[in-house]
Image (cartoon, rainbow, N blue to C red):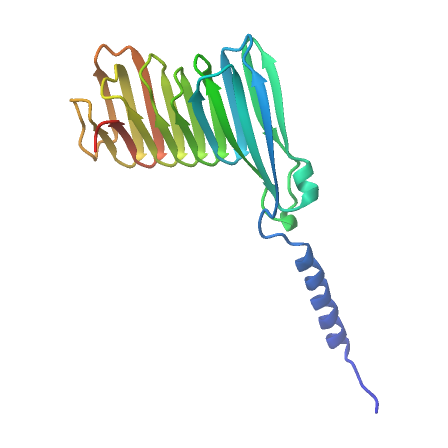
Amino acid sequence: MTSNISRRQLLGGGSLGALSAIAGCLATGRGATETVTETYLTTDLSSLSLTTINGSITVDGHEGDAIEVTATKAAPTEDILESVTLESSRNGGQLTLETDYDTTPFLFGPDPKVDLEVTVPSGIRLARAETTNGDIETRNVTDDVDAETTNGDIDVSLTDGDGDLTAESTNGEITVRAPDSLDATVSVSTTNGDISIDGFGNSSTPGDDSLEMTLGEGIRRIRLETTNGDVTLQGTNTS
């Protein structure tokens, strides 16, 4: 018995084979992961700068004499994961930590991400905490905090002290909790969202798109700004 295979059938079979081969190369997630830890002594340091492109940043204040960093890396493949690095440099009293990686080809899935979890001693200024795609959270950092993300929320818990705060997001909410005794000049704005300030004896009602106020003598400076999202400044004793 003779089988006749048409040219169209042959080409169709070849196309399906090619598609199957491509599908085998596609990576739909970040299945390759690695966690690294680093310790940096704070001798001669006064500030810290953190930058990642895809990933969250969490910073906790603590008592000690070292900056502890845990970087959780994730990438579509093991080969791409090997290209993900955490670069460090010291200059003028500042420790700079930046993530770097090779650009991921489209067929191999999403770009790598690096989540940073950091603890800093008191007296170290957070000169920069910046990510493009990810949330930022800081807790109990006693000195200045400067946080910026493009796509993500910012959550800050302030302590008593005189450190300034700048928090900026394009697409995300900003939430700040501070002692009821907060002594600061406050500037808040959002383009598409509400502003709520509560717990400081001079509160705003939701619905404002910009606000400036002075709490106490206005010693600290707090600037909160987002384009798409709500902004909340709340006293720590406010339920």
